[in-house]
Length: 626
Image 1 (cartoon, one colour):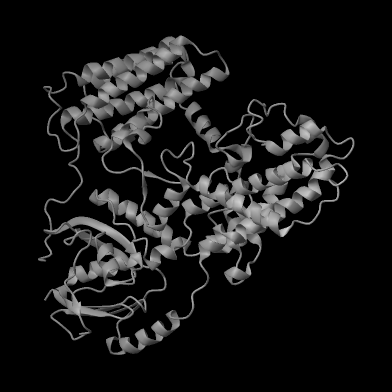
Image 2 (cartoon, one colour):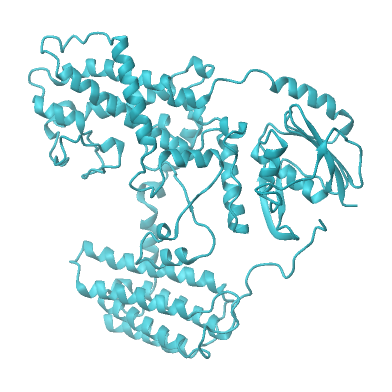
């Protein structure tokens, strides 16, 4: 008893047929893609089962509503009503769970997570499912609100920016140009280069650090110094932030009384869970999940995810600054007598400015950022709406070619994902992209007042590292201790504690190598950089890379192409020699060197003794029978 009768209902069409119970479970998991048609459901089913019809997995259902019990039971999926009725002896799926990926031949051991949106309802009173479905269909057929993105990106936003920046420029510019304030030349520079209090350099990719094309060689270090002293800070930057916050926190009639910031969090939790599950599925199966069709309702009415919220912040800032500069140029070019009393904004000028801002919006959305590789803001937003994770290319994975951790991560199999987290956005509630309510935002900030946040976690760690007892503080003693450790590890004495998996132990050693390299760089604060330090770092990275290349990979029963430990031990000895040199050159780093030496000895012990655990994975595969 393994088959069930499956019914899938669209708005105007019903489909029925007998399927294996596991396939019905995967169909329920595919509802996480919020399909409205059988075709969309079968396309989403490709997340959990290999497609057998192009890019879809054909369930083999026929037209008609046949909800009789068959073999192990029956399941009804009403896509229009967002209702699942279950009467099955095979399984009891729920709104959240896991299903096992089917590769077209058998069920694999890859347990893929899923979670449906909160609006889905599960019932087991099968006799009542038709009435429940009818009631829910009536409620869901009510008029839907206006298109969210038309309001967030369209004329509502552009007209708000054009009006508010014009009004703001009319109010602030007379104060800046008043007699005795600052020179008119300084005003021009101030308007085109916002002052960033936390940086001495300008990032041309940052909307808040933009330099007008007419001021390419201006230095922020001395620019606006007089203006800041007179005005108590850059009034333009403050005004732009205030206008941005006003747009986000002002209720809009077009949004049913919601604020744009409220709309940015619409359906956010479901979308973020979906992207997380797609990343996990991609990692487990090695196959990219099928994206949502662009003509589907789930795509058209998708919520605003974290990536889009970050992009939206930068887009609004770009438009605000562009409009401010436009009006400031126009007003400062006006006759002196008319400048203090700014005239109302004519309708024609408003229309021209919104058209100009629309062009800037489209250009910005199609231009890749300096730190996003080939990705444009529009492509990032579209991929998130289609629930497709952003994958790093092999070149993008290697962030620092000299970092052993980066090298290991770049060599790892499977995809590596790219994320935005909202770093460097203004630290105000209006611009926070993680907490939906003010209460949650305040609660998230409360840990910042704890002593560990005030003093810095690194301080405690440095104190702990510095408290490691040492037999002697002399450079010769440091070198001797490492030589003794080398001799002991060469003899391969048994370790008292059980060995870690070889891959994990190697990665932990890579972390220690990176930590030691950073510690050598940190000595530059008290002494000048020397060629000897650069040589030590190069030797450390090279010898560790050589050792790592000699270690067996998962699944190997012997070392790669060499008998026993004939090359591992000499490679380990070269590393010990380098660590001894570092301890002599920087006696304060001797505890780190000894810790790394200990980790390296354990790694080689496991590799030579064949104690590496077997690779993860089941001994055999379990078959569905489908």
